[in-house]
Image (cartoon, one colour):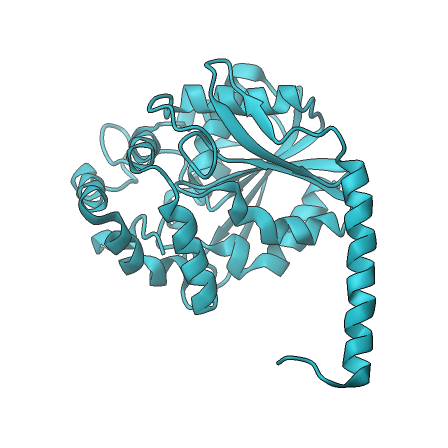
Length: 311
């Protein structure tokens, strides 16, 4: 299998009727914005962790909370399209920029799963969130699992592993289903040499032509905001983690969502294995879906996530 198959990251209206429709839409949007602003008075836009790192947070909507954890190299902005779907359904949507990502602090340390799990704990505690549906995308499955094994599920009612990189990526020892370390290290060397080029070359596999060229460019720009040292350190954390024993300890409703065309982390390497380690899981494999599933299969994911969160 080629190296880039793994971790490829990649009318104006006229006339009185049209103008009338536009005006109605603007009025409805203004009303909705006013209601949302009122509901958000006093909400935090930043959280400070136990080691003094400031994390940018977005906490929108009212109702049952869904906390979205970002994938490797992505800021919280990646979730905005999913937010607007779920806010209309009466859900509360929360996300934050992982340290070194987006507009959070980049302290140069703390990119291991233990620290990242404590960052998640700080967000949950400062916002006093309970009965949470936790959506862990890609790399963030590791920080979600580490949080649950360290803090329990008093605040978390259910978890979604979305295109996850868990449980154990690197081949070796008793992990006979994985990627050779030399291949993973080779990808890291290419990133360190020319990350924009590496990202552009892997774009097609990430999206599989299921997103517009403009959307693909937007996604690439989001990842280019990430601190390169933080990105490489998080990559190390992700490829070296072995979460198999921790996953066996999970005891809460679990949904696995994965694409059957995910070249970044194939289902057989990740989602299928999580389903065997965590008892009582629901598994949904999306036909034709790549790693960029939250965007490319947005409507399908909305339906499944809502059904699960309201369960």
